[in-house]
Image (tube, rainbow, N blue to C red; front, side):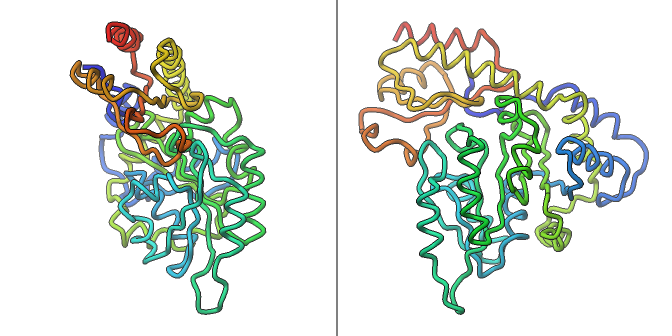
Length: 351
């Protein structure tokens, strides 16, 4: 079997496993009142060059939902991409945990919200005193299509958001891959552009189960502790989340892992571009490769135990969509081997 379904399917690096083993000694304060949690928070502030408020949860869905709950009232609207994870893949969790704030999808191109459409939808949003209130914007960096917003693109979108008094959330499930791909400082990709709160993903890039919610605008997290407790995401043995974040950040392990994953995806993309019957709808930017392949090829790959995900066609140009092809996603990790990539290529050569 060759498994390109997700970076989630891969193992945890030894550095993080060892950090967990080292932390598994003696007694320590519970519910985050311990020195390991403080150290993790300090490391995050140092990484982002900002005095920020950090909160740890075990899933990305919890991170997104609780972040958005803190910046959006129950009668508020959350503008997001039409193919965003919070809109399509989280079972309405942001709406549930925010006590019914409404997700409002905006058209995307290659996963990116289109600024003109955002402006049009926000400007035409109901504004009567009895209506729901335009409250927040959520963007994904990288996007669900594995693409990266440029600073210019983000600036255009955020200018509209700030003009409309929207709080800004960034879903950074693969934020590490963006930092590795752009070689920019994390601060320049987040609060330096105007992001209020970031869901800082770590699990996809190597941790066992650890995500962080980072509030750059600390005024917006007054009730985060209550949301954590009320939603069942305040862990009593918090040290086991915190120490994963420590192991992840120390010695820039997070960037090393992301660079390896991106590098292997680039290699995979180059191999697959050799085949004229495979369409690459946009260029690879992080560790995800998206392809349009003939239906027969999909069956052939499945028969030969190649694992991947069929992906939503929402962000595809309509002219690319037909019944004769499948839209699929392949994801690499720090653990993806050259043999897996070249064996796949060789298999397709024999197709």
